[in-house]
Image (cartoon, rainbow, N blue to C red; front, side, top):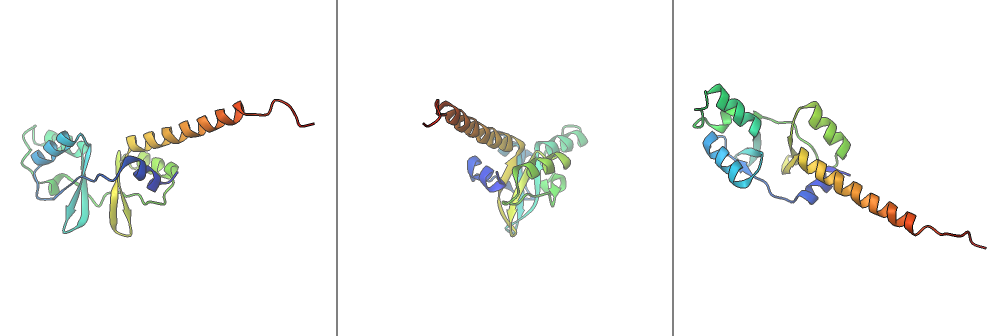
Length: 148
């Protein structure tokens, strides 16, 4: 299974913010949309990503009062990215090595979407369920007798 297949299962929703937006607006957007990350875009290109991890770090650093800080100050600039032809196992390994729950998927400089660790788990589970059903069907329809 490749990253492009995971993206197709997940759907094409992409949630973005700008570096000038406040942390408060990002928190509101993430809560309203029930998402764990926002891609930070500037002049049509990805410049970073904000996840709940950066939100929590910024709030802790400001004693819980830092919601008016700009996302450009708290985002992960130039985040690690995945590409569409990447295999799911390589994607999981990269996410674990980089301690990233969310990875933007980029193809020739174009942002295609963001994949979460949950998206990967769902896609792998769906693939395994399909394979399991096919194997059960194959075994169930196994010929009882050898041809004469």
